[in-house]
Image (cartoon, rainbow, N blue to C red; front, side, top):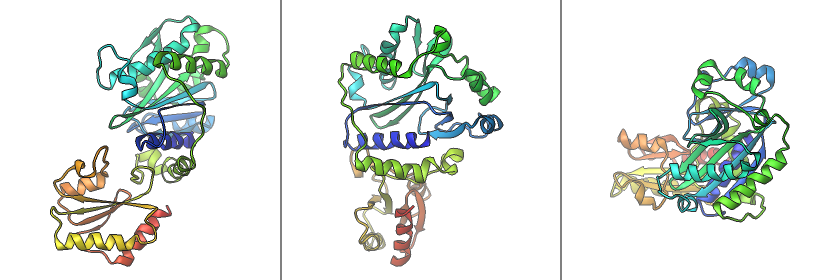
Length: 343
């Protein structure tokens, strides 16, 4: 599952950089517990049951704190798009909620042939009061990654044993389509119906495609430095990478730059010589905000901290404050950058 989450983020970053189109990604479920956003690793999951059942614990990028169990009886659908593709579907546009509603209605269109009565909310799709589809949305400016887990024939007994009592109480009842219909389902048939529903409801056409070489390299890197590491799964800590995943060097200087600031910028440029294609350098000037790097600019939390604490000048590499207040030796700086490049 971790490799699939890395793949989704790679496609999402590619869409943010306008290197790909809006995408619908579908894949079968894996026996795993997905921690959404900042949800607790220690409190929401029964770790002993996970070990006994071979259930992997993973963490997804999401604005939601949900914890979702899925397995071979589940189906994953991820819609990655610019919000403009969804805004026009709303009769009365409400930011964020209208985008969620548009995707949920498309999923419901795909499920309508099963003759069930569904209820839609921004967080899930339900049959009665029981959740059938659970979602993990994630935003970057006006770009949305909407990951939905559909419980076709998910093992609900495992679900109830793996989540903690408190997490289950907060979640409420869970159901599966197979349980409601009283029969087994073929995932490929349901998938075909979902694609039909999305195509009809959103009035879009699909082209089958695979990852580009750049997206594949990024997915591999995200898996290696983020999703496979326990620092991410347990504590939501991962290197800060901008755009398509280049090593990111942020330089924080005064505005206008002092002589020390100008010397630091020169030193960094010298340090990355020969690695220009692998490193992205951003010079941030105090007090000028995100707009100094244009539309959809991204600033690391470490740089925000340096700005708040008035640590200047500073060099931040992949979201970690490495050098502060003085000009580092160019060889020490180059060594730190090379280490980050080959994470």
